[in-house]
Amino acid sequence: MSQSLVPFDDGSGWLSNRQLARAHRAQLSTDLAVFRHGLQAQAQAEMDRHDTQAIADASRGALDEELALLRDGLAQAGQSAAAIELVARKVELMASIDNRRIARRFGV
Image (cartoon, rainbow, N blue to C red; front, side, top):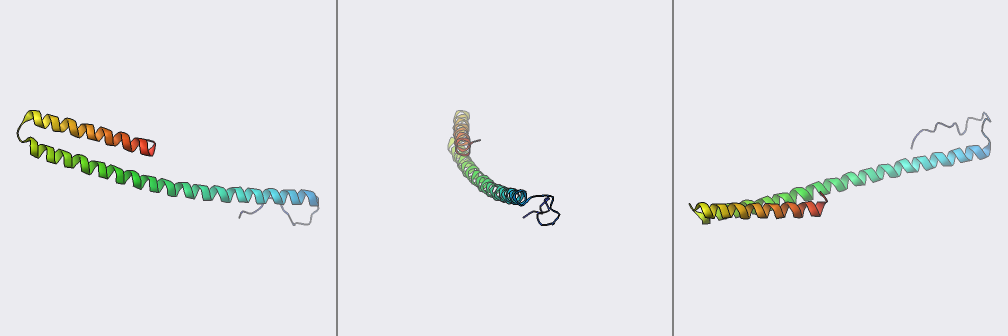
């Protein structure tokens, strides 16, 4: 893993066997902690990527439906200002519901 700062086998005798063993265990523990941290960071990055893709998919789906409602509603409303206003309110309501649902699902 990493290069130890403690000279485990230098033969100088400045550390007892017990101290060397303790230092070696501490180094192994540190190496394992760093390795686990790397795995956790990699897993979190992959989960974030999947979440981002899911949010994009949900947002695209919602937008497609909102635009379809707008397009169909405007076609049905014709030249009626009241009907156009009603369509606008319904599309706004749908967008608001979709946004709340997406936010609730993904914890935004």
